[in-house]
Length: 397
Image 1 (cartoon, rainbow, N blue to C red):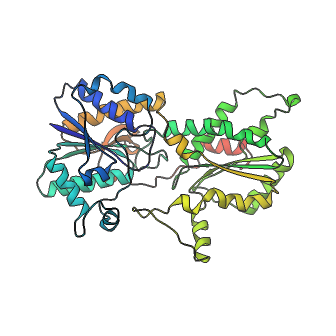
Image 2 (image 1 turned 30 degrees about the vertical axis):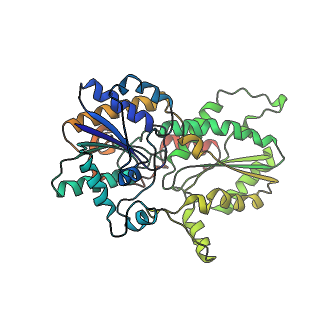
Image 3 (image 1 turned 90 degrees about the vertical axis):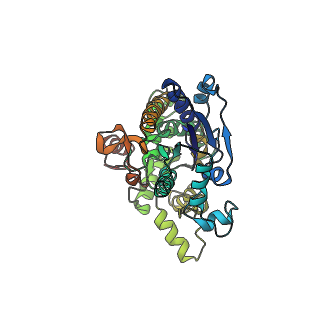
């Protein structure tokens, strides 16, 4: 039996650890198999580049739980976008990437493929599985859900998301001290989250939970308010810039600084609309997603608020690459191991799908059909802990 792994999309604190957990799970099942990993995701599959794991690899895989990133590498490749694949030299003119990828799996005699990625990664896996089924090749594909945004439908908790929130909180613990570098300082902490504000909200909560254990003394000019969050902006909430600006102006006048947590997906429609009116180019990736780094939401919000609150200095800091590249925390490691064990059981039973905490099954780890996997799962902004936090910082009454 030949079993292959493939990690794809952006990084998350679970990729190398997921490979380790899968290998350990297969060892516990006493399965005799050859293991390999396609290098740099679907790009490696198209190029026929893979790494053959040594037969005794399971003796040392435990160390991977302490590493972030992916030992076999990632990339963003859409197998149904032939134009982009050809442009990047992954296929020759006239070739179909999906067909080429399928033929490579057949050539390598892979019987089980584990994909570790977000909705794009796993929907591409579904396309592959369906294509091979149509031509009579028996391939079992079992995916694991990876995304720091925690925005995969219908999965309650994605692998690595909790760690990303924890790391974002740690990141801001240092950045917030910049409020002492000048008077009237505006700090914007931009957090990943294209469609969902979950990561921004969870990062803010973890930061404030940690802040509650700090010691402050107003006689030493250590006022908790200066280190606290003043606003949290996410895609699921409408934002009245003028109204919020006046509220934050009062904050600035009172404590000489303002701290904002911002989801990179907040107000994207407004930003894009403004760019279109100015006839500016709006770049997209191979999956048709707007390239958020190019439209720079953090800088847009900085322009909106800096003048209103009369900031002398504005600092925009992004924690995304810091948090998504971390090694998983204990909570995520536990979820990774449980998910990998379930994925191996399903694979050995020749059942394809994505293993995740299914919101339609009370959040129980289940094998979810590929056709149910979608992106853009919204965060419920009315959830009690989030509303409580908004009340505490004065964003809602």
